[in-house]
Image 1 (cartoon, rainbow, N blue to C red):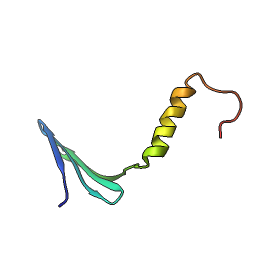
Image 2: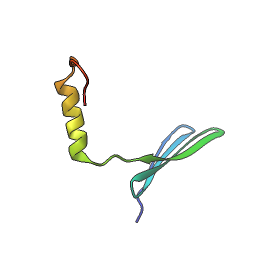
Image 3: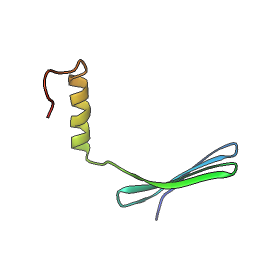
Amino acid sequence: MPTQVFIQCGSANLTLGPLRGEYLEVSYSVDTVSIKGSLYIYHDRRQLAEFFQSIASNWKGWDGVKR
């Protein structure tokens, strides 16, 4: 069963979901404007944790080329 989240504030509406593979369907509408799209969901936890650890470790920068 697909899951969706609906958020409403005044005339603005945001819908998140369903998740289709690696993409999250998103729609937003307010008054006479509406948009729809798909967001890629990054889900490699190990690489994401390593990325943020690298940022935390090198917050002052580094010498030379970072590879």
